[in-house]
Amino acid sequence: MGIDRGAVRRLVEMTRSEANDAGPESLLVFPLGATEQHGPHLPVGTDSMLVEAVAERAVQALRDSIPAVLAPTLPVGSSAHHIPFGGTLSMTSLSFYGVLMDLGRSAASAGFRRMFFLNGHGGNHEIAQVAARDLGLELPIAVGSGSWWAMAYDALAEAGNPTIRTIPGHAGAFETAAMMAMAGHLVREQRPSRPDQGAVTPPFRSDYRTEIHGSWKAIDGFTDNPAGATEELGARFLTVAAAKVAADLGSFYSDSQAVV
Image 1 (cartoon, rainbow, N blue to C red):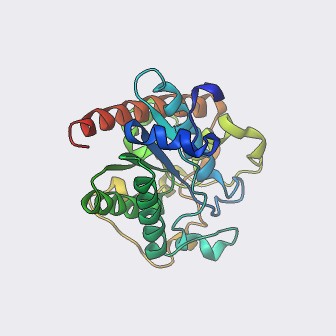
Image 2 (cartoon, rainbow, N blue to C red):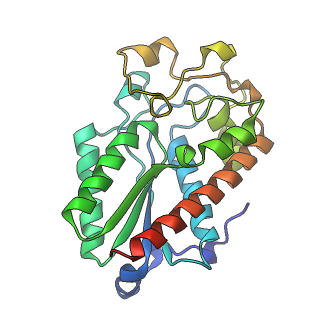
Image 3 (cartoon, rainbow, N blue to C red):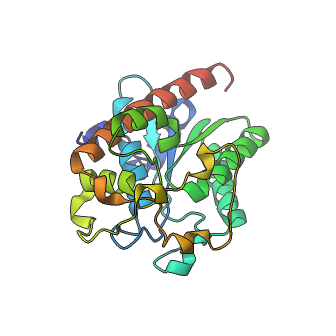
């Protein structure tokens, strides 16, 4: 699914008066990415590129139903667990939380009353949710937060079955397929290999949160075998994810209209 740039309202392309006029009735979508190692075969900007692609497609899908505005993608997140591998830029959890609070406060000062942190990196997941909660408590605005693969998990699992079962993983088959569909020229052909039983379950799909020191080094920075990735599967993932994210953003906007 291609992007019609004219169908996506981007904050960076607006003048100040256009942004001021749009703020009170619009939903401002903040894509949250990361710059971090993604194994030996994917670019360090994978999370930022994928969340921006999903956000663009979702905002485009909403163009005839709600006034959505796409904020610039935040390309650095909380990625301390990937620093030992190199190729990683990271903020501490407290710094990242502070950045999100500052972004939300400034957007509210500019007149935006509804905003959504659309996350694309696992290390940002809980922090973005706490920032959304605190902003909504502090200011008379509505704030949502969700990771795109978690929002669309059931649809993604169905789209990948039976070939790709670990969603999202890290630098495994799921992300490799999505990158092959979006920017295949950036996927290196020499992919690492790991038996399927080497896959690990992302903490936000488990019953509890864990972090075991040294665990990322032990699995060489990627969670599952990327061998099953195909461009076709990746295109399917992006399509179903964008549709579900668009539906969730539409529901959030409708729910918030009654209170802000």
